[in-house]
Image (cartoon, rainbow, N blue to C red; front, side, top):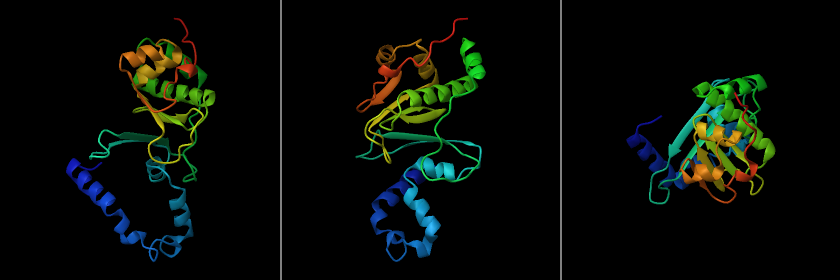
Length: 213
């Protein structure tokens, strides 16, 4: 959203001056300044995803990616995605991904080459199935630019980088979910970027068997 120079300048100032920012002063950071409702929203906000969803027009998909540069943060990446709901702001993360229409899923799976819309639908659908099969918040599965989900039982993640992250493209995710590709083969080919404990999802895959033409 901002140029690289401006982003670097603002980020450096934000992090190096955070603890001396007058906004954090007890005489400023209180209900009198932000109102009780405002303070409640601040206290319940734990991620960039929530901020993006809360400040985006209702009904739009929200996607953002960022990369932190610096000696301590070099190479660390993050991305978030959410769905804005018509009901407006609510505490916590956006509603979980839901399985898609069975007829639409079947239609998309029968095509040999998936369109971008096919990949979007199938990515959300299979992430929803994975969330049902492996409920939890210890692993974040990222399939940019379509969706992301937190899954697998374990350490509960509330803010910052999750304990484990898996990132892959839409076509790879669909192939894994339908059994066309194994986790071991995808990892060996470099099609999966996984880090952290519990980042191996092979125990939960495939999610379905792709119908034959």
